[in-house]
Image (cartoon, rainbow, N blue to C red; front, side, top):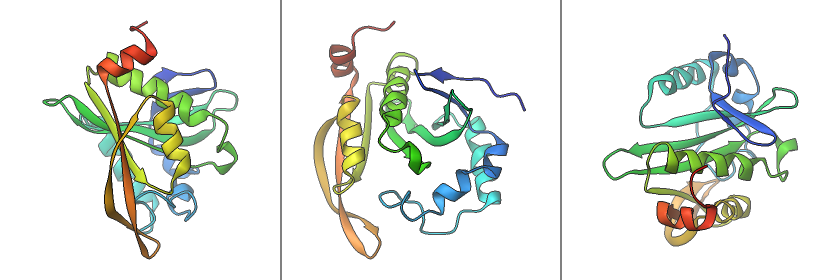
Length: 187
């Protein structure tokens, strides 16, 4: 299957998920307790058939834009990034990301990919609001949300159960007019 880049950053290209992703590192990420420490995955085992079903459902979804993050240097699939639950009436979506390859943590890839995806959401999909929520202890995700221009909007107390405890979830969001002030007009 020929796969083309959908969005580009300096070090990455973002492309649709493809069936062969289910044969790569993708399954390992969602079965890795540390990668899934602060997300809703790792509650049930994630297998190849489930991955293939999910990948197929994303091919035709008009409410979820899920893309593979791939390093340009070696075509290595290192994570996934998404605008999920796109609401075409209220013009909003939820930002989500998993950087599955641990050797890529802390290198700025999430901010690179997040910035270009948020820009796409506002300027191409005509969204007015993009948000995300993360457990209070997930400092890398909190820094990422702020780094791509989101503002802390509040907290949902004990909203997530993970690893035997209830966690508070910090909510972040941004609206189009704030993004334009921060990022400048469309290019």
